[in-house]
Length: 233
Image (cartoon, rainbow, N blue to C red; front, side, top):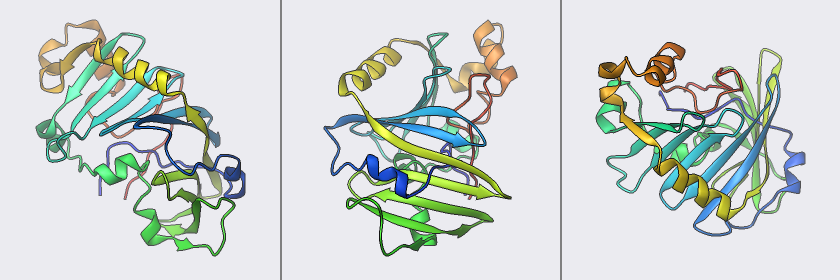
């Protein structure tokens, strides 16, 4: 199954996630800061506002913004903060790219399916979460799943001895989440279908050359524009 983004380079030891163990989301508008460690380093913000989910890399200001107000016709935008630009994709565009959109997977950090394939552990370090561990597609996973938020508080992957860890650290302030959404809405937007007709636009030409536009396989990038991680299943 081919899923847009979501990171599956994932995160840390199950025990360490006990420090951040929420029993509920603070409101309809909220976010979580994740820290990546191991083979690569980075920070990722997961932001939610009702039916909208965003994965945002504050280092390079790149965001992947999903809107499921109409679940049958989800909208997706890739946001570039430094340029104050946005590229909007619609359902037909996603089909053209061969992307299968799963609202559950996107909202869960692309980890919901792991609960069915990993082994549930008898205990977890967090009363509001479930611990899972096991192998899937030649990757060893350890995950602490928040039953309240329906996403992982921590997730660790080991591939050929190389470990990558994501760790939820804290909630993002509601005002900050709202500000991000409002700001991105004001950016100059280009429909994905029109990108090819606007290669004279320096920004779009740069995005095409860097591979940010044509194949949306990664949700988060490091400071050099390289994808932080990917996962195929």
